[in-house]
Amino acid sequence: MPARAKINKVALSNTVSESQQGFFPFFQYASIVGVHVVLVGFTALYLPQSTRMFGLLPVRKTDRPQSEFMEALTACSAVTAAWTLAGLCFLQVWWGTWVRKWHFEQNANGTSDEIKITRAKDNELWFAKLCEAVGFTLFATLVAHVVIILFGAPLSSHHLETGLLALTIAVLTAFIPAFVFRHPSLASDTPALVNRLNWIRLFAEFSPRNSVERIVVYPAVGTVVGAWVGAVPIPLDWDRPWQAWPLTPLYGSLAGYIIGSLAALADNFVKWLAQEQLRSVQQPSTKCKSS
Image (cartoon, rainbow, N blue to C red):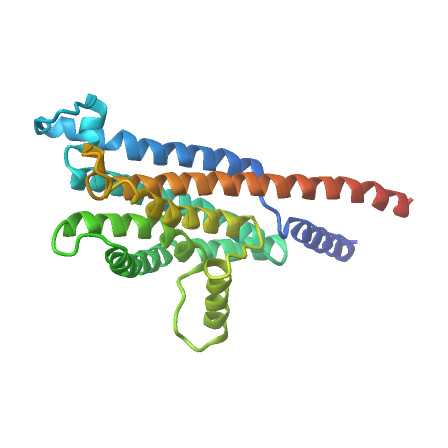
């Protein structure tokens, strides 16, 4: 009897793990991503208002007066970019931790005890993977800086503003995939090769295959497109304070990130509904066969 009970326990554990493999907690994701995009918007619009706490804003003579709210955002573009970047750094670490959790749950294999052991080992490597993701983000910042200059950013001036914009774009695009999937490397072993191929599939072919990959890819693409579109108003002869470099690409990248996050939510919702419908259709047929 004890041996049979042990066998049944192992079988039940295997059944649970098999049913959970590929599981994605959509409702938890929907609530967390809602909070995330709201906090990104708050960081972009209200965190730069903190400049008022450290002194008066510079008085500018202009024939186009602005509200106090806009004045705080446009008084010094470098300060606005720095405040926004500081808030995003904390937000992306928090958001990346959630995405890593969902990625682990979606790819977990084995019995319940084996999954717990693997999760504990993965949690022990959290800080090491965070440092690796930060290092890759700094490398992506250099790449983004060069690309931004090639696309027409000031070369002989506004170095701080351009650097802050490049770092913001790197935080929004490179940090999360590096933190979740690990950064691509030039190593010749099989895991490194598979990881490079996954990065090529995601960011060159734009072919995400599951919910977590859509969560990572859509906002990254939205950030790049938003930054590019955001640069359009700068050369226009409107003489507006908000046309100062790099405010429009900065806020364009943030808007693109939010739109990409919401697009991933909508796409995941549609696919989740389809999976639930398919599961509800399959369950009655399974019961009929068993009876």
